[in-house]
Length: 288
Image 1 (tube, rainbow, N blue to C red):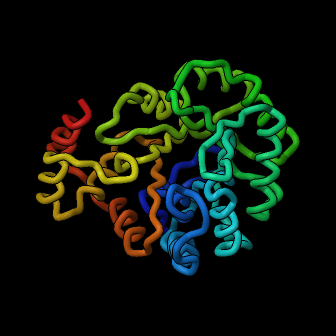
Image 2 (cartoon, helix red, strand yellow):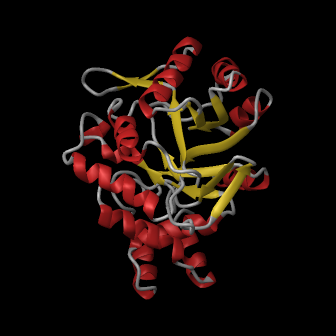
């Protein structure tokens, strides 16, 4: 593993320092994040290349595939290099046709943690995010029972750190009364700025804000402003969108996904792109 982390690093605890440019492994599964990859060898190569390029933050879940992505991670990287942190999440399952089924009963959350441990070949998970959002979106529904179940496993030593995915400001406060929260993982990008206040709160409290779908979802953001700025900076629109996120706050971390080594390298190159103030001001108009 190289010693230079793309985008720099973010230290969240004595035993948890992440590269700010991470890698989201979701797209290593088949279409719809379901089933095996089209090219297993390429999927393994992407994972190994990410680590070689200095990424120390891999985002995954046992419900990607399901099971497929965690099995790929273990095959490609186990025994894991020192300093590599795997962040997983629980709170959903998949049925036989690939539908996403919320599954947040405390007993099943604990079962999902054990399944992640088994398939990743770990005795302790670095970070487990509780996935809260659903097809109805983010809510302020109470989460003490669910988060408390994960806090129990943290006390037992099966989890080192806890996070939340698809969370509201009120739910973050509720969770923090139970156990420390080191990561928040919400939809956020140039065009989706509804979590601006939460991004700022995370920066103030040294909580990593992992912006998922940083390029707008499964297709790149479409914006004339973004394209114009990218052309002036001799970069791709995707690289500019990622660079904007890294400059948005000191604790923003990115987990863009890809199943291509070339695309992975392009994403990582965005960590070296410094946006001048006038470009940032112009880009800020997109989401407002």
